[in-house]
Amino acid sequence: MGRRRKPKFSLFKAADWDKYVKVKKGEATYTVERKAPAEDKELFGVGVIPFGFSPSTAAGATIHMNTSISRAGAKVAVSAITGDQWDKLGIVTSSTASTNGPAGWYPALLTITLVGVGDNGEDQLSQLSTRTYNKKKTRSGTMPFGRRTIATADARTGAATAAVGDRDYEDCLKAILADLNPTPTSPASSRILSKSSEPEIYIPVVSISSWLDSLEDIGNVTAF
Picture 1 (cartoon, rainbow, N blue to C red):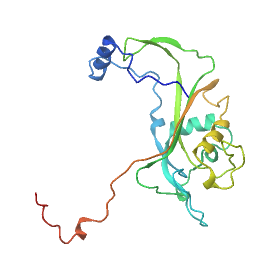
Picture 2 (picture 1 turned 180 degrees about the vertical axis):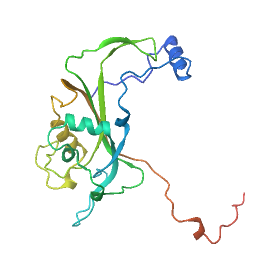
Picture 3 (picture 1 turned 60 degrees about the vertical axis):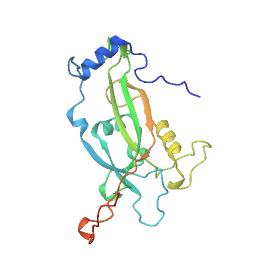
Picture 4 (picture 1 turned 180 degrees about the horizontal axis):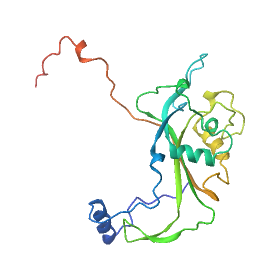
């Protein structure tokens, strides 16, 4: 079993809370260092095959579902994943190859953080507390991923999976991580500092059953 992590802010003392609250109230400044280019926030449409339900096996069926990736995520994917990054992630990049997914569905995500090869960090005072921490210069990118259409081994047994529908979250994630580039192509002289993943989620949403003009008799308010 992994080590239990302490709740966020659990080590804060009175002085830490005072500083944190001042920043949140705008009474103290907070400076973002080395801002990423504004273009990195731009979103682009892509499609992935969800893990939560079995993809159709009908001939010609569109099984990829619409989602998005930021330019920052695309940059890191190209830099840190060897070979065809999009096939490895289970991504299609054309709108004609993807369709709308179920309401409330959000894809699985992989976040990769890059750092300079020689960057061991330096002690820096936190802008949100009185604590000092080791600060490195990093660049991160988050990318969606789904069931892969390329050869993928079973994460537990190592045996080949026969079809797209047989490839689950753990199978695809393990295969992607195995293809990470130990020497990313950019920035120069960089390495992978960390990688983390989140499974896809389904959030219940209220759907519209029909338009109001189709309701002929609205009815009275229910009696008390």
